Image (cartoon, rainbow, N blue to C red; front, side, top):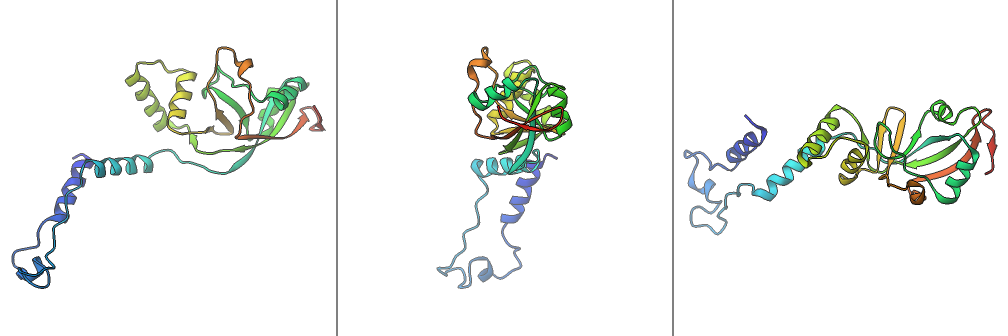
Length: 212
């Protein structure tokens, strides 16, 4: 039996009249049948109440959400790129497994691997906002969403799916993605993201702090 049929059945049992063997005064209020304290039976839930229940159960079974800030790192192969980030902001990357956005790592070694021996990494404070943990249930919802809309499953569709559901960031293991759509000319769309605060820049080779 489906869960909604069970809920309706439980609700009907709740509002059913009292047994007939109880005195009429109990059924019609303390003053008896003619009392002004006659009790009206509660009404069955309407469509709005059922929709609220569905939203409640959907949120309870959804992915875990986080709020707050984390320290994460962004590796880049050139100090000139770091200077451009300071001046103009980040550019949303594409062609990645977790959709479009700004990629950071909570693991410093991962950021250094992207920077290379001659590169630098930026230490950033990331405001998570509403965070999605990408797991098999979310993948199934995403696949169903794409099928309903008739769109193929790619990076752009994944980002649209999450942003339309109010998510700010996506986390998978040690990777944090600040979600942002990718544009045809991404360099022109570089901007400072309100969720990311750059704290410092360091050389990947010796972790020395530098100015850019």
